[in-house]
Image (cartoon, rainbow, N blue to C red; front, side, top):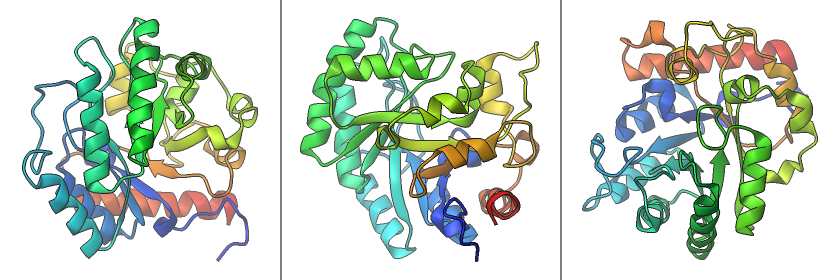
Length: 278
């Protein structure tokens, strides 16, 4: 076992639901992650907008309690949940549903995307959303994506500052970081305590000109070490105890069973951390 503080065994990593497909059922994610040796999972527990279909179990009835019980039995930690985006389609009540879902499932963190172009409205919603989350003992990791309303680290920090929320931090995705035009120096300049979650995948160093940002994010990600992103520098810029989640929905493996996709993600992550930090 390596003495390098940035080295990670699989049990010290989180498997993000997207690694098994955008519509991976939460129960399947739990089982596949546990079988592959991951210590934690990030689950999506609803569609991105109100009314979107989503695999069961859902927030209706005792679905979230079933997920919590299953995680406890495996055992595996639920590190975060993803629910409704902040968008023109969502109101505060939808965001409060995210908080209630996190409370019921036992997740300490909500991974939050934002597609609302009115950033003044975002700041107001985030203020009340964060207050409810704080009351539930939950933090919010706000994600910047170059195809979303929050395109950069700077955009996201300004919205957080405007909301005056103390339990909202950054979600840094390695692909979105690269495509936002930023580099690791911006991550190094941050207070490590402001980074609540880091999602890792690899990708080509540059986006193909005929591919949109959204399409690349959904179908252009690679396993760790298979692309051209400077993942080693990104991991080195994080605190040694940072929450790291794999987000590697490799299209070539999309037809494989969930358990096999999780195993491949684990094997690639093991090789990456051993070669860079072992």
